[in-house]
Length: 175
Image 1: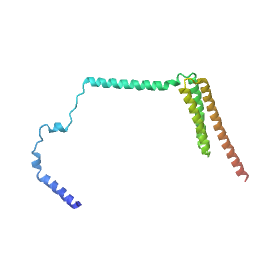
Image 2: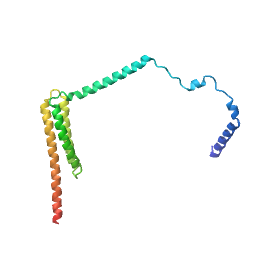
Image 3: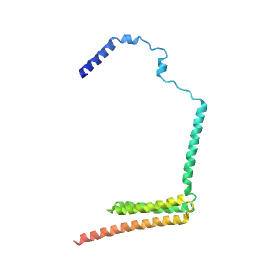
Image 4: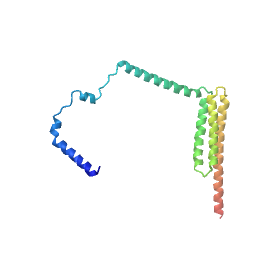
């Protein structure tokens, strides 16, 4: 259908409605039609409300219990609190060094080696938390030693890059 025909039909319909408006307005809607159009509110019995409240409370208690049992393994490890303090200390130093290393033009091999160190540390931590037969003192000591060594490796990387930059600057100054 062309646009002109549609426009004519639309105008004819509008004109027909205007001309016969009085005929449309005198009709009344059948009784009960409005009730069918607008949904009625369903009344909920008080017992269902209380059951919903009880189910919600039970759900919240269950989630709290599960979350509590998931975080509990760390608390039964002997020396865990002292370890966490040391871990935070070393991790803050490692984070600073890592930011410095990321700004340097180092190869991806260096960054992947650092990532490998992180994976070893994660394995030690997982073994500590999951293996009930593991010697916690030995593992905690190994984890702290690992963090120290990682820090030393990062220091060595930064020192070598600094020496390289110094040598490059000396060579430029000589020319």
